[in-house]
Length: 113
Image (cartoon, rainbow, N blue to C red; front, side, top):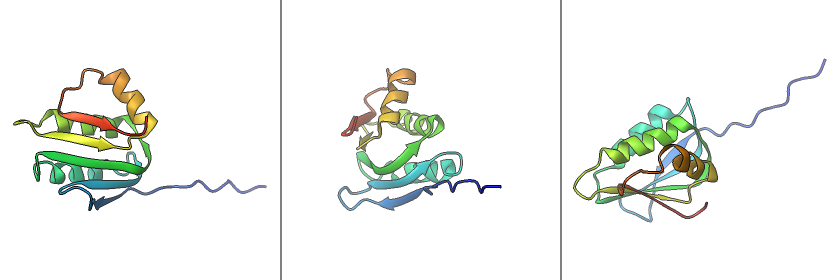
């Protein structure tokens, strides 16, 4: 009998970003286990400044629901506010292109594609 191989998990970690006021840096994975934390962090950071910067260089995975939360929260913005996503993983780009190709000016994706 052989043991099952260990599965690497990358718990979600969200920190304030020192490079932008009101910005957040995301590490790990956004999946079912982290949806509430992800949504809470986005909602807290929105409105601090005109642009909310979300840095995803440390993100290993984001599921479709996680992308939907980002899009839905950005769609709720008004008054010229927007979300700027930095270093988005390729999976986020693919999901955005397929499901939200018409997302408005409230969300801008920069970096890694």
